Structure formats: structure tokens, C-alpha cells
Amino acid sequence: MIHARIAGTGSYLPQKILTNFDLEKMVDTSDLWIRERTGIEQRHIAADGETTVDMAERAARAALDMAGCRPQEVDFIAFGTTTPDMVFPNCGVLLQARLGCRGAPAFSLETACSGFMYALSIADKFVRTGEAKRALVIGAETLSRIVDWNDRSTAVLFGDGAGAVLLEPADSPGIISTHLHADGTYRNLLYCGGGMDLSQTRRTIAMSGNEVFRVAVGTLGRAIEETLRANGVERSDLNWLVPHQANLRIIQATARRLDLPMERVITTVQEHGNTSAASVPLALDTAVRAGRIKRGELLLLEAFGGGFTWASGLVRY
Ligand code: ACO
Image 1: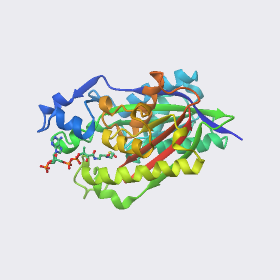
Image 2: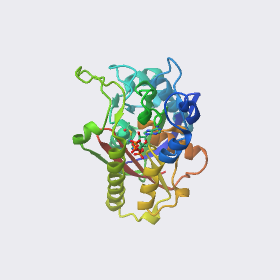
Image 3: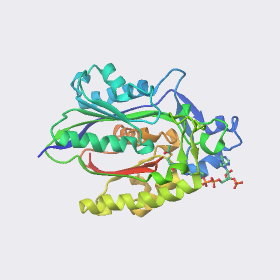
Image 4: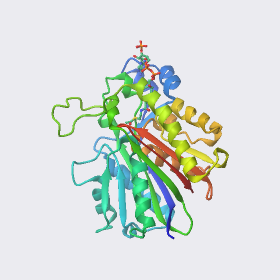
């Protein structure tokens, strides 16, 4: 039986940093409010002309380097993003051309903050069926381009960046299970217009923060319990929670549900803000490269975002 394991991780953050103090000069907000309500201290912002695929390429090459895999060997690309460079070709295809892995299937999917988790779940299944051997999974976003910088309720939350993992076949499970969900009836609580429905005039992120917060905490709690139950795993078996980085208070609530001390939770929201689909692979790579997450450890990954879409997964790193 073939399984998929994470052979390498990579990430990239744009150079420019926007601190809470910078934001104080742009909208009616304060460093204290942002830190108390979200935990965020700063976020990275893409340079003029720097695109989602530019950042994804940097993250992908870092993951390939770690795995000792040549870019031409990649035979599958699943790319989560809601801020694509173009309507088409999709970001997966644009990345494929840059990496020089011609012929490999490449696609992007737009499930907002769960984009990476959805992509991971699909790539895992292709590796497990033997249809792919070197599957690149990406989460990358330039959210700064769809943020209304005059709207203090959303401008303080988001950032840009990219994360990647390379999956390879293995004898024992690396990706143990993934669990994907969506409920489109919540579409009006968190959305960004600007698609082909021209009656949607709002082309920047709109969010009913309070309600999203409430649903996110409850839903993520149920999602992690589903993942533990599906695998007969106890909370105490987990080494790390690698959560979606939207808000430190949501992360703390999830950790409490797992009885996990915050020392066992990877948090990057303070430095990265909410990077949507990039958030989980960015947090994962940051922790791997810092030597915190080690080979053989058991990780619980989760994400929640616009749609709503949400996902969780159990991974033996
Ligand atoms: N600075 C100062 N005051 C602010 C700011 C700001 N940046 N933003 C809002 N306020 C004010 C509000 O106007 C309100 O004032 P009022 O009481 O006078 O009306 C007050 O602060 C409280 O506002 P709330 O929205 O109730 O604040 P809350 O504690 O809920 O925090 C936040 C807001 C941080 C947005 C929180 O609700 C949250 O994190 N929500 C979930 C976000 C999330 O998880 N999104 C999902 C993923 S994102 C994706 O998919 C793209």
C-alpha cells in the first residue's frame, strides 16, 4: 500500500513589513486594539508587481531543495489561492512553466483560507493511488490587493505570503487523514466580489468579524474532534497543533479544546497576520526550519475561511 509523506517544506514572505504602528497612520486603530483582539503585530506586503505565483515559486523551490528533488521531477501541482495572477491560465500552470515540469497536471482551487488543506487532501489521494510521485502543494496569497485599506475592521488582519510542501510516496502514512467541509449558506458573512457576476460591486474583503469568529471557534472544535475520532487518536498523542493563523484568540480556543498547552501550538499570526491559504504551510515551514517540529512527530492541521470552507488533517511529519 502506498502512502504520502511530506518530503520537504518551504515558504516565502515579501520583504516589506507593515506594522500595527504603520496602520495607526492609515486608519482609526491602535496597536493595542489589534494585539488584544487578534494577536497580530505585523504583516508582510507584496512589492509592486510581485504576484502570488512569484511568491509561490520561491516557496516551492525551497520545499524542493529541502526534499532534494529537482523541479523537473514534479509531476503534480495543486495550488490553493483566492488571489490568482490571472483568470486563466491558473496559478498551478503558471508555476509549472517556471519550474519546467511540462506535462504535469497543474491546477488551482479557491477555497479561501482552507485552500492549502483542500490542495493537500487532493494531492495525497493522487500519491496514494500511484498517479503522482512528486506532488507539490501550494498555498499562496496577495491579499493586500483585495483589502480595503480604508476599512479598519479588515485592513488590520491580512498579509501576503506563500507556503509549499512536497509530497512523496512512503511505506507508512505521513498524511494520515484529511477531512474537508463547506457550507455555502454562510457566503454573506465573509466574501470578496469582483468575479464575473458584475452585480457584486464590492471587490474587497467584507467580513462580519464577530459572527465569523463565533462560527469558526465552534466549527474548528468539531473538526479536530472528527479528525481524532476518525483515527482513534487521543489528544495527548498529538505533538503539535498547526492551525490556520487568523486570530490568536481562535487558536487559543482550539488549543483549549485539545487540552494542548500553547507551547505545543505553532503560532505565526503575530508576524504574518492572516495569509489565508498560505497560513498553514507558512506556519509549518517556519516551525520545521526552527527545529521545533521534528521527523516522526504527530501534527494536527486545520483551517477555516470564506465560504465557509473548513478542513483538518492528521499528519505524521
Ligand atoms: N481598530 C479599532 N477598533 C476597531 C477595529 C480596529 N481595527 N476594528 C473594529 N473596531 C471596533 C468596532 O467598530 C467595534 O466598535 P463599537 O463597539 O464601537 O461598535 C469594536 O471595535 C468591536 O468590534 P468587533 O468586530 O465586535 O470586534 P471583535 O472582538 O469581534 O474582533 C475581529 C474583530 C478581530 C475581526 C474578530 O471578530 C475576528 O478575528 N473574527 C474572525 C476572523 C476570521 O477568522 N476570519 C476567517 C478567516 S479569513 C478568510 O477566510 C479570508
